[in-house]
Structure formats: C-alpha cells, structure tokens
Amino acid sequence: MKKLLSFTLLVALLAVLYSQFVELAYKFGFAELKMVAVLENSEKMKVKCDAYALGFFDEIKLQNKFQKCINDYQNEGYKVISRHDA
Image (cartoon, rainbow, N blue to C red):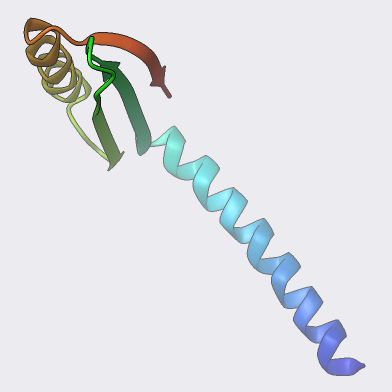
C-alpha cells in the first residue's frame, strides 16, 4: 500500500514539474509547430505534405518549405483535401 501511495505522489509531482517546465519553456521562445496537408488527384491517389519542428526554429523557412511541397503537387494536378496547422 505504501509503495502505491509513494508511486502516486511521485507521478503527481512529476506532472506538476513537467507542466511548469513546459510553461517556462514557451515563455523563452521554445515552441512546437506542426503542419499537415493531404492532397488528392483525379485518380484518387493521395499524398501528404507535412512539417514538424520542436524547439527554437525559423518558422518562415519551415512554412516556405511546406508551401513549396503543396505547390509542387498542385502543379502536378493534385488538390488540397485537408490541411491542419497547429
């Protein structure tokens, strides 16, 4: 019983410390960026363009690379059917 209680308290303490670390990290510019787009052509073939970064990164450069992927596929006749930016 004591082991279970100790384990529960340890997990709770780690959760609090993690939440404080994440909040502090975002205040100093540490960020997460995820972008996903699914494209489909007339033959119902699907392709996916995605970009993911965690930490300190150049957001504009990442968005340009993501948009280039989309533009390349659109030039081949694909259409965007879903897009998610977070």
